[in-house]
Amino acid sequence: MFEYREISRNEELMNQVADLYQQVWNQEDCSIRDRVLRHAGYDGYRGFVAISEKGEVAGYAYGYFSQPGQYYHGLLSKAFNPEEYQTWLEDCLEFVELGVHPSFRNQGLAKQLETRLIDGVEQKTAVLTTQSNNAPARSLYESLGWIVLNDAFYPNGNEKSYVIMGKKLQKEHT
Image (tube, rainbow, N blue to C red):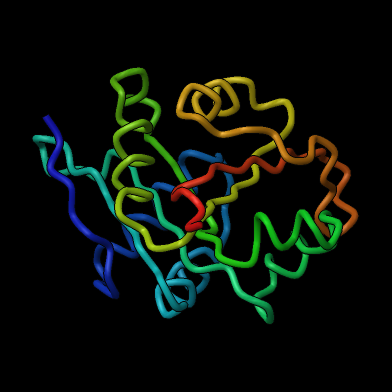
């Protein structure tokens, strides 16, 4: 039903992802195109789009290797004690974005995109954030094995509460 394509630095796909981001989150965000393009240059970047039978971008997901010096890595690191940091952020895929157009929801697309994004990554863990009150997203992630690491995360003093979720991707080598 959907064709999956890797998002590289393909400008047309990047523009479509940026447009869908604005539709999904119902906001005008002129910086999203630049942000998606910048993120595509990060180490370990992976991204996928789902294309409908009519050629529309129905959904997208992307992430990258979370490293010191990156903006959001810095925010996340403040939310963890040293042991949590070592466990969750030292070798981590930061699951940055997942969005599905409203007309394509409840068809398993978000699960497919999440699975495709994290399948085969080399990092030991993955982390993501979502708004604390976003019950559908939290339910989706929990059904896929994500656990709550911090349920009172306020990036940049934001008034909205976020939850940090994590998922172990590879077994520890002994």
